[in-house]
Amino acid sequence: MSTNQIIILIILLVYMAANVILGLVMSRRSAKEHASHGFLQNYFVGGRSMGGLVLAMTLVATYTSASSFLGGPGLAASWGLSQSWVAAIQIGTAFLTLGVIGKRFAIISRKIHAVTVTDYFRARYRSSAVVILCGLCLVVFFITQMVAQFIGGATLVQSVTGLPYWAGLALFGLIVILYTSIGGFKAVVITDTLQGIIMTFGTFLLLFFVIRAGGGMENLTTQLDAMNPGWNLIGKGPYGADTTALSPGYMISFWVLVGAGVLGLPQTAVRGMGFKDTHSMHRAMIYGTIVVGILMIGMHFAGALTLPLLPEGGIASTDQVIPYVVLNYMPAWAAGLFLAAPLAAVMSTVSSLLILASATILKDLYLNYIVGKEPERRQKAERKLPRYSFLLTAVLGLIVFLISLNPPDIIVWINLFAMGGLETTFFWPLIGGLYWKKGNSTCCIVSIVVGLAVFIFFNQVKIAPFHIHEIVFGLAAGGIAYFVTGLLSKKKLDEETLRNCF
Image (cartoon, rainbow, N blue to C red):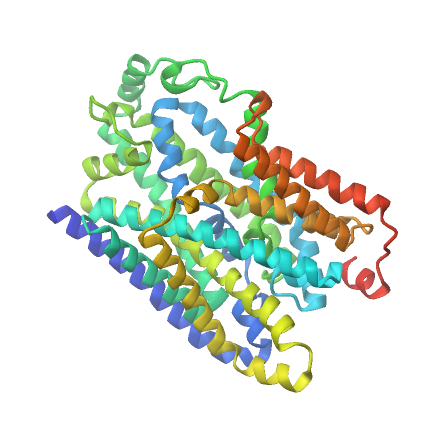
C-alpha cells in the first residue's frame, strides 16, 4: 500500500468513525426521549423533530447513490454535457416529493400515529392483504438494493486503498450496521446531514482540481473541442455522435424513473412523517433543490471535463474514470475527502433502507400479525422492542453482508429493476390513497399485481417501443388498474378512514 493510499484510508476511517460516534450520541439522546415520544415514534421517525436543513439533507443523501459520483460523471467523460442535461432532470426531486406528499402525509401520520408507509396503508385501506403484500415487496427490493450498495461500497474501498474486497466489505458493512442499529432514525438523518455536506464539499473539490489539472477552463475546452467534437452540445452521444438515447421516449422514461416516480419510493416518502413543522418543510424544499442541483450539475460537468486527463488507451469502465482522476490529479488529503462523498452516498442509502426494512418487519408484520391486538401480550412485546429493533437491524445487515460476499447472478438481475419495482408497487397506492377517496384495498392489490406484472414482462422481453423504459409501462398499467377498479368497485370508505385520511 502506497503512502497516498494510507493517507486516504486514514481519512476514510476517521470519517466512518465519526458516523459511529454520531450513532452512539443519538442512541443516548434517544434513550432519554423514549419516555416522551415512545420508542416506535422515536426510533423509526425520530420523534417527528427534523428541521429544514436536516430534512433536506436526509432526502438528498437517501436519494443519491454511488452512481451520482462515479457512474454518471464517468459517462459524461465521453457523452459530454448531454449527460449533465439528463442528470438535471433529478434537480426538482426534493421539491416534488415534499410538495406533493410532504404536508398531507405528515398530518395524516400524526393522526394515525404511523411510523412507516405500510402503517399508513393499514389505516387507509383497512386490509391485511395490502399490508402484507406491500411489506414483502418492500423487504425483498430493499435487500436487493442494499446488496448492490454493499458491493459498491466495498469495491470503492478496495479500489482506492488496495485492501482485499472482503476487508472493504467488512469495514463498510460493520460501520453502517453499527450506527443504524444503535441510533435508529435520528442517527440515520443526522449522519445523512453530515454525508450531504461531505458530498457537496466533494463536488467543489473535484471541480477545482479537474480544472487546475487541465490548465484552466480555456485550455480544457480547447482540448475537448479537438478530442470530443460536440461535447458541449445537448443531444449528442459519446464523442459527439448522434444518438437515439436522448430521444423523447428515453427522456420521458428517465424523468419518470428518477423524477416523478420517486414519489413512490417508501424510503423518501417516510421522510414526510418526520419533519417538525410546515416551515421546516418549506425550507427543506428550497435547500434540497439547491443541493441536488449542485451535486448533479457539478459532478456531471466535472465528469465532462475529465477526458483530456485520461490515459491514451482510455479507461476500461466508466465507473473507474472518477477514481482514476482523483487518485492521479488530487493530493492525498483532497482525494480522501472527495472519496468520502461516494462512500457517504452509499452509506446513507443503505442506512435508510436498513432502518425502514427493520421497521416494516418489526412494526408492520411482527406486532400486528404475530403479537396481535391482545393488550397484555402487546404491551409485553412492546417493552422488548428496543432490543428486538437493534437485533433485527443487525441481522438484516448481516444477511446483506453475507450475500454480498459472493452475490448470485439473480441478485444482479433483480437489482436492475429494484427501483422500478418499488415505484410500481407503491406509487399508486400512495398517491391514489392520499388524493382519491374512491381508492380502496381492491384497487391497491390489483394495481400492484398488474403494474409489477407489466413492468417485469417488458423488462424481460426487452421490448422498448420508442425507447420507452419499462417503468413507464408498469406505472401506466398500475394507474389504469387502480382507477378503473375504483370506479367499478362499490366499496365505500368508512367514517373513521375519511376522518383520519382526508
